[in-house]
Length: 344
Image 1 (cartoon, rainbow, N blue to C red):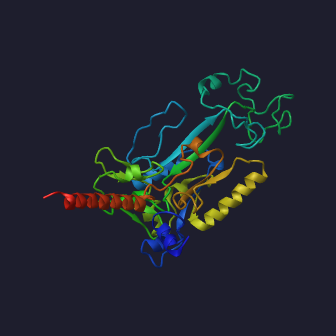
Image 2 (cartoon, rainbow, N blue to C red; image 1 turned 180 degrees about the horizontal axis):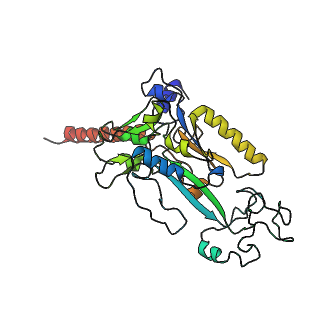
């Protein structure tokens, strides 16, 4: 690729090592972000509560989805952090989540209520109060009569995948690129923030986001999303969600340090036999130039409701404008030609 092409690529797509510098901050601090390690998320939703409390986000109802214990459903204008709950019928006994399961297993027909009704009645599920499988029925990796390191009560019906989702603060943020009023802007920390007093509610940014994160508030039409606690960063504090996380599932810091830490964590899990562990959104070579908030997942991205190959929706704008200009020139040429050849 030529130098010109590289410069063009850094404008709307491709790697961009100096996001803040490209946004006009010559002496910016290191780019800050989130690394969410879903392998240690316990689904406590402390991050959701802390986010709402600090940012004074209105209550948006506690509505069970009918698919899990999740009562916030997804990210939106009034939910800037969302903890996904995914139940799967996959073996858990005596092993870490994500190991030795059938990749072709169909999980769409799981009836979690039927599984719950069988607790304490079948061979795979000990009775109430049991803390260890009886001799002869211990799961692999757990000696008979002792507590399993993963399933203390010996249950093997379901495994839980939990993940705290948030705005990705993309390197190439389509929401920012399409905003006609400048309501969205890039901060000196490389994050993307909405100025609600500038937003006119046009909604262009909503379909532009490849992750479906940004959303309009119903009562006034303006858009809202995670700011990565921009006000806290300015006074040396970490974001409220990371501060409140009891297991350090949500880690905050300089993005390059987080990427290095995440790669080490994946290597650790692989060495322990968790071969499904993978990073999502950390690569500068992906369709958005890398995310400012990336994840360690224990299954495919689609399982967590994440797009498998997100691409910034403004990537093809130059080609679109070139094609439109070519079409316009062709129409003008045809019109001029017909005028010149018209008989007098």
